[in-house]
Length: 255
Ligand SMILES: [Zn+2]
Image 1: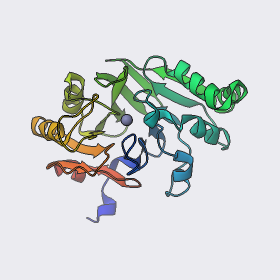
Image 2: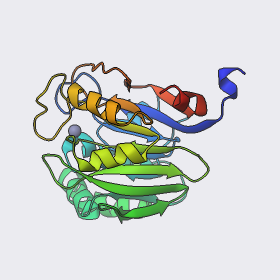
Image 3: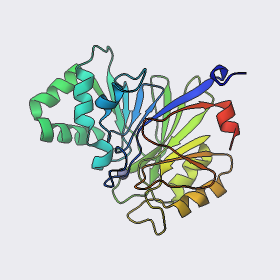
Image 4: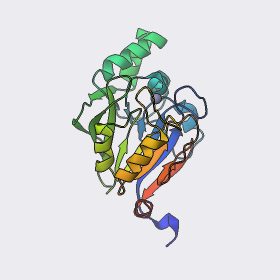
């Protein structure tokens, strides 16, 4: 069977795999199944024009409110408003996501722009807390509380209705009970690796933490992003900007 014949269970495009300040790659953003954007740190409108088959996202999922995960949100909403796309834009995130988005957009573009975005993007907001499950479109999304320097920081356990694969995805997190839960629940876990060497400061992971995660979750395929220098951890796959990963049964079986 040719690789192109494999059934794609989920498509993951890494738009931004860098950590906050190192400038090695764009800040955090990943697109799932060409419609769900996880975090808004990268210059997403610019990147969408340069990658095939990607259009403005229908759904935007925010893990926490740090700028390297949200800084491009006003620009992305402006981009969505400029497209012809029908239907609402759902922004999903921790408790306070609507107030945070309004404050951010009003600060950088003003109140009139915010009111335009609400109207032209038909903005809808969903809050997710620990153990909350929400559904939108074909997606089911369960929140898992993580430990980071800024609270709340939420990891998400995602399933797309017709796909027999689940993806756990985090923004920033330390090695904590929530991350262990998310890893054990997920077929694939995409998480951060901010530090090459321990100790991981300020609520982050080091390569040693990831090695422990790999050891403790042999049935979970672990992917790494959000790094300042390229991490190499046996049993984990490091993503890079512009990389598209098609999750297939064959991919999952190569753990
Ligand atoms: Zn971050």
